Image (cartoon, rainbow, N blue to C red; front, side, top):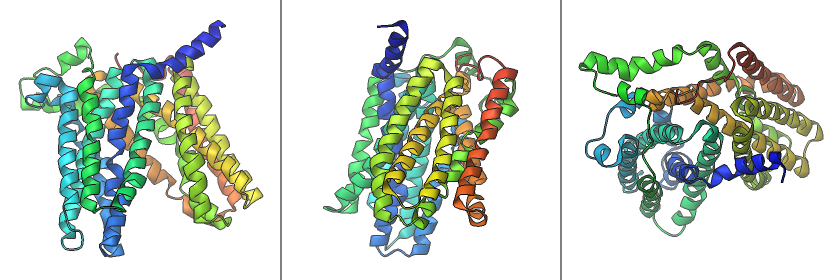
Length: 434
């Protein structure tokens, strides 16, 4: 075998490392609760005769996922009595959030949406809060337990586990609901959180740098503690060269992809595809292609590094948008739809793995939970806001022109990446353990 072949084999072999495998199981625990407060819950509400208006308002219980950066400093800084001493700070917080999550799921399943919808809403909000808190500490744990060259594989595994969690909480929950009551559905989902608990108990506590440990020491005053918990993570990030450009890149890298994605389903419907056709192709090819793309992106990051992988995956995402324009020309053709959805999900999965690895590399281990929560919230909120004019643009333009424009929207992020790479080399981002 050639030296290059051995390098690629080593890059693939990263997925066999125990700490990388553990990230996949934690990803499952992270993805499991999401649909239980969204689409799965909405089906239960509809069966109970809750009004459509009320069901729509239930979407607000997802607010903790967008605001989790507000309490991330507490998770980053505070120990959990007894659990921290026995398991360590990160594992202690994970166990606490998982136990609370199981209790919240059991409480939600025991409610009666038809009789007391407000109680159901409060319990759903509690599930979302515990889930978002679990995400904060799992993301911090992932960044701290992996080496920087393993970030891509870690990102792929977290996406893989997360998607499996979504599948179980979506289709799996509905299968259970078809044969028993909703209480037992949520009880079964609560029991599956034990997958995450077992993973935490079998995994080591991350080793942190001496500098990070010192910064987490006692500051001697409330004012000093608040500075270290709330101000210091921002101040630390802003000491980084080119931090404004880096934040702009975080905003723009997935812009073209998000702009196209927001109008993808209306586009399919207008071309004459049935809901069954869309579901079959997206479930079969979309899900598999996303997972394949995630693993491929992780291998690229391990083999080539974060910046080259971001460039390659960004170009592939741009090309996938142009493929939508080709679909618009071809029209109603299942074969072409398979190519379009397959390539879009493949490139999107690769881009997500590289991008999550990049966000991980930006975090200082002294403030991992806070900085990653801020970056991921910024990415999610900004992507939603920036993509919101997509419907208006689609109304003003033909589909071919619209998707060509979404491809153009992907260019600024790639140009900014190349500019940052030249202006602040190397690397684009400081390693997590600086």
